[in-house]
Image (cartoon, rainbow, N blue to C red; front, side, top):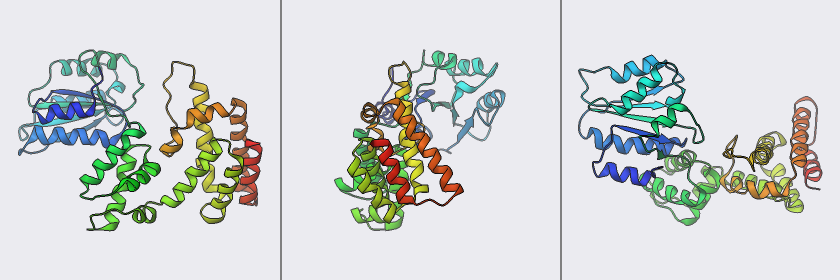
Length: 326
């Protein structure tokens, strides 16, 4: 059974602490919120000792030794192991034994960044530990996180400000927090975040033009895509800077087309604006697989021309839109 973050934190606040936790999902900000709340309750006024361990940087034996070593100078510690399913050899079953028989005065937090990952280790762990959901929430829940983060920063805002933050950085709570943090630092001691702050400091105008253009392209709105594309090239962008978001859009469409109808979990290669990302299934219905592959081939040729010979950005973009949508 998957445990919601709200429920898990509620139990911690009621002093119901477990010796082992399994976090499932790759939103680093949500992971940090959970560990911070756990740390506050577990350590209280005593010395804080959080040890971060990675299966990619350490051997399994080193991880097990660190967990089991008794520190004479530290009464309590939290050990955080990222992607424990990647631990190889004898250390893997040893870790499962430790999870079943936890070390006194220690808390073990296991983090599985890959929601869809399946392994013998994870199957065994989830057999006796309910994972806590720390994956990036759906767009509708991002508003709660925007409000929460702004409040945590000691600031206030309004609906429009929160919507703009979500539109430009809603692909993850980590990204959202980073953008809010930048604006908060730049406005200084002023409490109220205004829409002009977001436009000025977060690059919102440029990002808005981008995602409006991508939405038009994804929806096959020829006239709108031409109008927005020309405006972007003239005022904000070059073809070089536009290649990545356009390529990402069609790569996402290709990925969705390949995965749809299978038992595979749909994920994404590269973060794109949340307002665009949530429309991928709709866009995919408008494009045939051959059209997507054609668009990607065209983009590769444009990229090569941009790097090897002179080409006019506006002409390149309009020709691309014409070839792909018409």
